[in-house]
Image 1: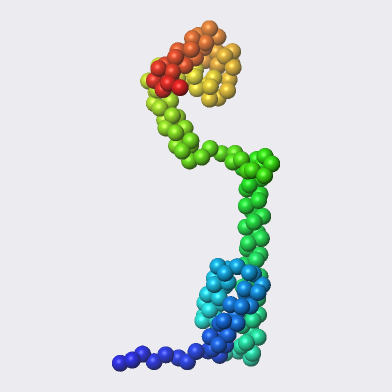
Image 2: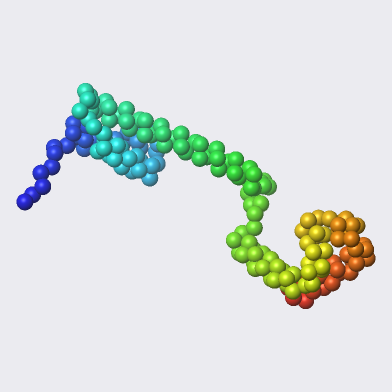
Length: 175
C-alpha cells in the first residue's frame, strides 16, 4: 500500500516555485554563497513547518519571511562580531597590525601542567612543616616574617624550610 501525502501548502508551493529567486534575493543582499545556501535551507524549514491556511498572499509572505531570516542572520553576525571583539580586546595585544595572544599555546599549557604536576608530587615528599611553610610563603604570598608569626617559628626557620624546599624541587623537578 502506498502512503497518501497531503498536497503541499500554498506557501510551500510558492517557495518551490521561487527557490532560485530566493537564492538570488539573498545573494544580492549578502554576497556570500555559504550564507545564501544556509538561508535558503532555513527558509525551506520554516515554510515546511508553518501552517499556511491563513496566508492570503504566499509570495509576499515568503519574501517577508526571507527578509526576517536574513535580518536575524545579520544581527547574529553583528552581535557575534561584537562579542568576539570584546573577547579579543581582553585576551589579545596588538602590536602594529599583528595580534599577540595573551595566553600560552596548547603545547606550552600542556607542558606547564605537566611541570606543575611534577612540582605538586615533589612537594608531597617534603615534611609536613616544610610543605606548610612553602605553601604559606610561595602560594599564599606571606612574607618570611608573616609565615614565622603564623606558624610560631623563627624567621630563620622559615628561611631554612624555604631553602630546603627549593633545593628539593630543583633536584626532583629541575628547571
